[in-house]
Image 1 (cartoon, one colour):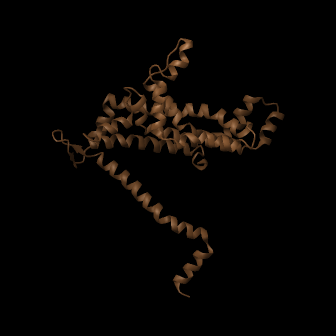
Image 2 (cartoon, one colour):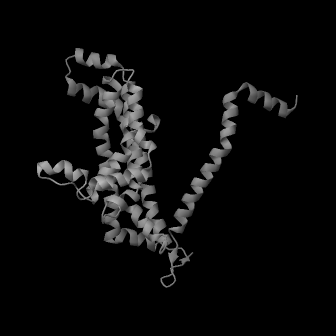
Image 3 (tube, one colour):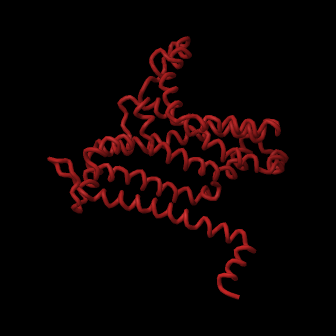
Length: 287
C-alpha cells in the first residue's frame, strides 16, 4: 500500500485530523499576517522623519520612545487612556453582574435565551449609529438634559465622562455574556448548602459565587479593556477635546509615521501585560 493511500485512509478514519489539516493553512496565514504586521509596526517605530519633507528616514533611532516617555503630554495621554479602559471595565462589571444574575438565575428558563438575544442585539447595530445616538443623547438640550432637568441637573455634555459612558454602553454585552454563562453553570446545591450553613446573601455572594465567577469576569474584562484602550472614534465624536492614544496615532500617521508606530506599540504592550495578568485568574480558559 502506497504512502498516499495510507494517508488518505487515515484522514478518512480521523475526521478531527482532517479538520485540523484543513484549518492549519488559513490559521498559519493569519498568524503570519498578524505577526508580520506587528513586526513592521515595531521596526518602523525606530525610524525617524525628515523635519523638512516629513518623509520617513529608515535610520535606527530610539528618539521616538525617548520623546514618548519624557514628554508630559504623551505620558498624560497614556495614563488617561489606561484609566479610561480601567473605568469602563469596572463599570461594565458592576452593571453586568445584576443583569447576568437575573438572566441566568431569576428569569424563567424559557425566557432566558430570549433575554440573552436581547442583550446581544445591540452588537448587530452599526458602531457609528450607536455612538452618534449617544451624541444626540448627551448634547445640550438632548435626552440627558431633559431627564435631569426636573432635579436641577444637566447632562455630562461632551468630554471624558461622556466617552466613558458611551464606551461602557458599547462593550457591556461582552461582559454580560461570560458572567451569564458562569452563573448559569453554577450548581444550585452550592447555594443551598451555603444557606443551610447559615450564610446570608452577601456572604454567599462573597464566598461562593464571586470566586467561581471571577474567571469569567476577568475574561469579559479582556474584551472591555482592550477595546476601550484602542478606541479613538468614540472619543472624537463624544469626547470633546479629550485625547487618547488612538487619537494621537491617527493624527500622527500622515505627518510622523514612526511616532505613530511608537504610540501604537503602547497599547500592544499594555494589552500583553494585561493578558499575562489575567492568565493567572483562569480567564483565558473561560473565553
